[in-house]
Image (tube, rainbow, N blue to C red):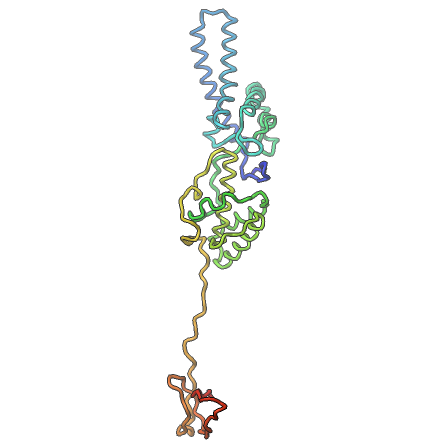
Length: 334
């Protein structure tokens, strides 16, 4: 991932394009431009056959500059950094801060590209791209741009489950500028492995990460929102902001789905809190052994529906006095 930092001090998770994909995109652009240049040149030669040599040379030079220099600049400016070859390879030209390029960026890239790509057959551009850690050529260095990948290859890393639909737009006003990259990485790793964790352990981890994230953002976790769903919604909000800064358009996903207000429906799937197992209430008192045979004839006061207790020898009980109050009839077990 590239270490692009926006004006709000937010690092963008963008992958810079390397030399093979960039070379393929440039080759496709050159094939399209040269094909158009040859067709236009043949038509102009047939149309200007009656002109003198100087006029034909001037027209040929103008066509060369227009099709091989001006056309790529215009295409990148109007498409915000996406030429024909870059669209085919899933690439895009962005600024150093991740924003869309403007005319001045495309102009500098196009003029320097004439020297390092057309005049040197791409040798200078290849050397500069190999030396740069981000795969940038000289035109990107002088223009302050970077070529990134829009379509990331599918890898073995698990994807982050989307948050519940009822959290759509809940954290759109959250300040994420103070969240460090290490905490973002920890949250993403937890969400990608949430299905592999024990429910109780995962719930504990989610609560700890949600507390750290709430401390960094300055806003507490909303009541009734599970910690795992809160983490997924905040991560998706950050990805949507990165995409809007880099590509200038919104993103589709759980943020675009409708949903009721928080608390109207519980979370489903991996974000449901673990079930709470409560101990069963005691049912009955344990049975007691029967009275000995030599005490079988004895009698003792008993309470209806009370458990059986060992019989004890009858002892004379004096009637309660007025100070002691009326008798309750309860006899403690022996």
